[in-house]
Image (tube, rainbow, N blue to C red; front, side, top):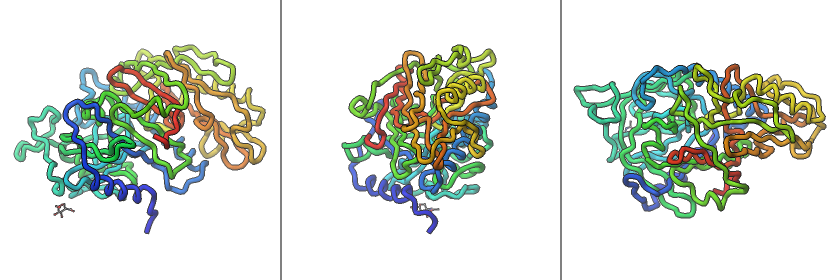
Length: 447
Ligand SMILES: *[C@@H]1O[C@H](CO)[C@@H](O)[C@H](O)[C@H]1NC(C)=O
């Protein structure tokens, strides 16, 4: 049997949990919080740190390129229509969210968590064009609550089979991956927050039942869960007002990360440092995505001489600093990266060179030296009203026996993306009601 990974074992456990526990029902806007487990896309893949970093770097660059190429968005085009054929985000992303769809026997789905797009979809039976997946395709016939969205539904876009009164969708991602099929509505089944046991049912969630799915999909997932501000996204449809995630170290592949839809439990109790917040800022070209105001960077005791305008939106709508769940490695415009690179080279007493596999900046260190023993400079991102003081393992790691590498990269554009490697061991709360990002250092596997 090929790779009976933690993920598969986990999915059986999830089923059991869902079958045995009495559900709580969600109606309208609710204070009920839903929980879901997250797995890293490379977890259980048996990769070395070096391979993991190279893979993450390659994906981050591809995603940055495709997010950039989507600009400018056509004027007046609503950012929320789930069914128009257009480019939305790069599909290529990093974490899968696990939950289930349908009643009375919920079917497990593993969807790539994407703050860069809105549609929620999963591979469906009977499939015309499907990718190989460890997760069985969703069978809507087996769900009592499943129904096809009628043409008159406000969530239905311009694509409809009038004869059968069935709404369908076509969706294309920036990397040319596509999905098409019927739009369905069904009950989504989540776990209740930790300690409470049981499940939370969210009825009437619209999602794509994908029967033509072509492109760059992976076998540990069954589709994509959009988490943008678009009205078709999972947090928007659930009307939760807040969502959050907390990524465990991606080098600990046996640990699950957590996502919460709704107010996360005990944010304060689980924080290992101060809870800080910074307002989201509006992007003129991508109002559906999550941008923050970055003002500067400190390396060690030195604030880098970078003008704030390096992180601002440009005339054409490019630039800005986006917080993204789907980009692994934080990327800065070239000129900013050069400053950062120089500061690390000045402040670490080891010879520096680009690693040929990942293209990241690495230092030749004495054999066996761990990053924390090298006393590397601290790294702080200064956001409006908040300082993101990065834990060492979130930017500098030992690779091989005699290298320390800085896990920060650069774009060929004006865009800054704060990636999920830098968000590890940090509880990141997207407060959509107050339009701000909250974050607190946390032990994510304890949530
Ligand atoms: C879908 O579920 C129905 C009802 O349980 C079953 O009869 C059918 O065989 C299933 N279809 C597929 C393709 O598995």
